[in-house]
Length: 250
Ligand code: SF4
Image 1 (cartoon, helix red, strand yellow):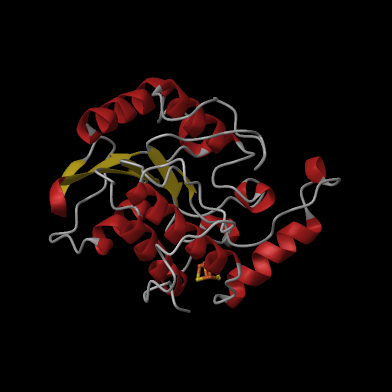
Image 2 (cartoon, protein in one colour):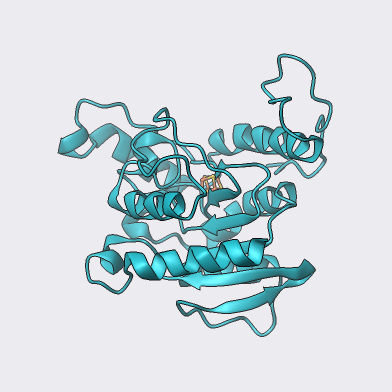
């Protein structure tokens, strides 16, 4: 697995390569890097347990989606290559992103997240129903440290480690990021590991920790139904996190 560490071909965008030339040069370079990374991510089969699970879920399906095709592959990050705010979740949901092929799309967690991003001005619409629903992000990128849906939403340490290179390549490409919003303790841990923070920050909602290069890590409860149904995470709390992210991102 290369995780694109050699930068092969990046920045050599030519007509017909799918890169949008209406955007500024650094963003174009980031878009090229991220598009190449996406191709590598979606083809990955490095974790046997996750490959088996994501494909089994796609084959057996939830009854409500029995008539639909499932993506059933790794789910790459999504958003604006010029993002100043990065949102890091945990992994695709079995019947959400693993079904639709786009992070936090097609489930209740995504409804909460994208509605909040829309209220904060990072998204052009509050709905995230399918990969072709017209949703666009401006100034934000949404990703996860594990790109395949894990059984019981619990990736193993080995699976985190196997996927780490993808997040690292993504962060390297997203050079404009000033604020990282970590949704939950595992996301927070992955971010802390990436920047080798010592001591490791203890996750809390509202956590604010300086990262190298003048960036900031913000902690936020995950938008899982476990948190949103119980009132542990409210829309006001989520809005406060993204208001702060926007303020810090400048
Ligand atoms: S979790 Fe990451 S490393 Fe493992 S199979 Fe999926 S994309 Fe590949």
